[in-house]
Length: 148
Image 1 (cartoon, rainbow, N blue to C red):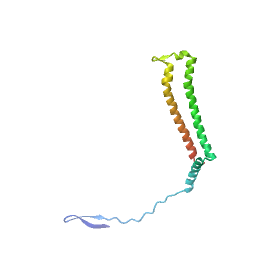
Image 2 (spheres, rainbow, N blue to C red):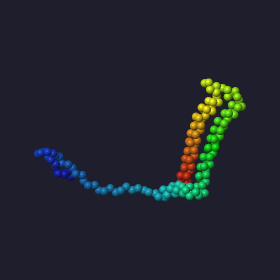
Image 3 (cartoon, one colour):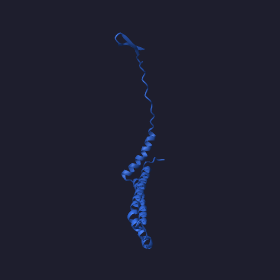
Image 4 (spheres, rainbow, N blue to C red):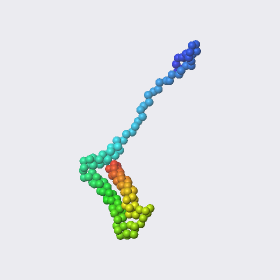
């Protein structure tokens, strides 16, 4: 079907412009919704979150497990610092010849306790943050894990 001819200027008709035919309305696409699977996933994580919020025995046990893991991590890394930094004065007291060693004109005890201890403490702090975040992520995964 073509529409009426249009004029392109004085005395010259333009080409006829085709008019599209009306289309039939397309039916809407079907979407399958399975409510049983969705409710099962939300039910598990929602129930665990409710147990945490209401401080039930299960929620309390979960939180105590996280606190215990964080405390164990802190104690382990504190022992590393205590042995490494606390052992140096003992080493220098037991072996005085080691304490008399000089590097670049500075005694070894001053270099180890005054200079090298700070990067060591920064490294231990960095490791603690990484491992504590891993503990928290494991806890979150445990809470949000779907029931099997």
